Image (cartoon, rainbow, N blue to C red; front, side, top):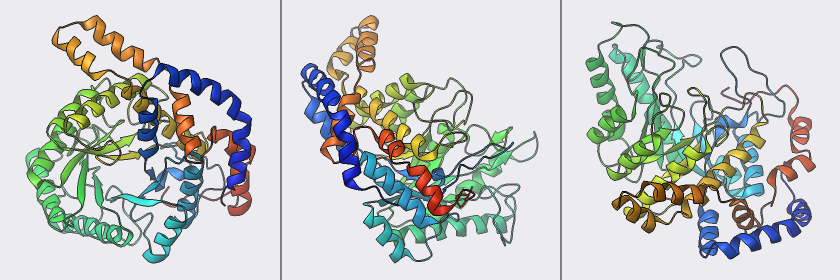
Length: 424
């Protein structure tokens, strides 16, 4: 289904008087309001194809109905999101869950919804139907060269699918590791993984990027072969200039200083992008900004400082992607909230007076550095986001439109109440 533009416009009329008052006041207090709105309009966040269905835990999964049954319907759902917020103009595919059997047709469907193809994601963390060799004991790290070669070939196939769709990057996340002491030789596992990654990197198109994602634990709990940003940085540094580290906000041990990690990776020109989510304990994959929005703001503060220092475009310098799991919430509402949280943190960070912050840091004025950061963080910038949506023809209140027009109910009528998104 698609949302009629008039439905958005009609809903906007209800919210417009209040928005005008809020925006008028906020704009009067922020001299750079127009510039921030322009940056917000340009800032697009890729939606992962796997996040359009209900997630779950190892204890159970409770589908909500109306989930997309194929790649076309996943693109259609992202088209719904993009129509509502004009900030979700890209899809990140997961292979083999979303193999584009007819790339020309899939590109046409995406173009109809004004959607481009972001990073392609490979999957060697689970065995697929009719797969010859198992990844039970690893993939690119496996002691058996034949298993490693199978995993290498899968990644090369993913690149080919991406080329057909116009993607320009490959994300590799490995579940490889060990569950018990002595299970594997750490050095050999690293070397096997590096050699496997080198074979994939050698086939990377010249205008592509390769992202190596790390994770501290799970599914292996004794060791992970790409367990932290340092290990990822080792791999990408050895691979070459087109290889970068990808940061998933949930892939750290508790209380990790992610903002410092981001700063240093940017300093080394090895930060490739993000998988945004939030967590209380580990890789919870909760709605972005639902647990620790201040950390998200601090991360964006370091991102803006680093991007500006390297004269990188905020919108295109890095890959901006969401990776969340909607165990109890409507996936589309959850994604609308996640995009909103990301852009709120970005807008707040744009308010930080970087010159005054630098001066305060150089003078060891710790109280002032705190005031500068928290003044920006405590500013309610939602009217700026609403104005950016209004200027692009999107909804002032996306979730209001979603509910007022019973979009989930319409999707259930169209697709059925027992559908389960492919790959989940």
